[in-house]
Length: 136
Image 1 (spheres, rainbow, N blue to C red):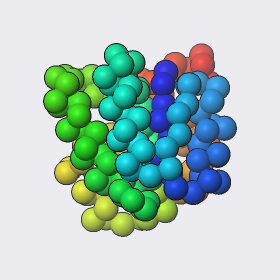
Image 2: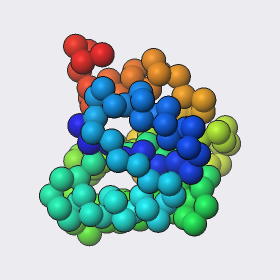
Image 3: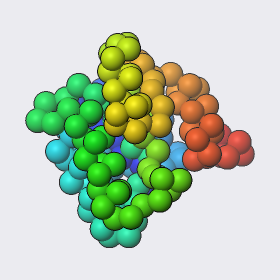
Image 4: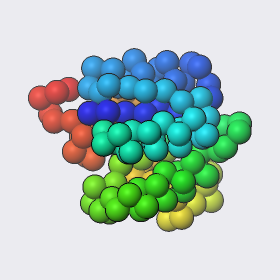
């Protein structure tokens, strides 16, 4: 599995990296612009990400805009909806509007509120069929 971790907070990026490292090759972006660039490079290189863990509140370009651009890139490249990258929005915001926008407007796959619990993240990866029971 390939994962892209997108968060402007060093501690959050490090924690997610430590949690995902046993299951995925991880790349890191510190804002939405870097995330979109990395996603585009991976898609055009024929090695797209299986998972994006995406913070919503970031400088330069926020997670919501990055998610819209990621989905647009997939659409432009003819990615079938069943093959879209799984996007877990990970944020400190427990905001119903942000959640609604991420899911229904941006196409997020799921949502986890920080601080991220490792067991909850791994349960989510299992439910998204990104890891098997035996991997955990």
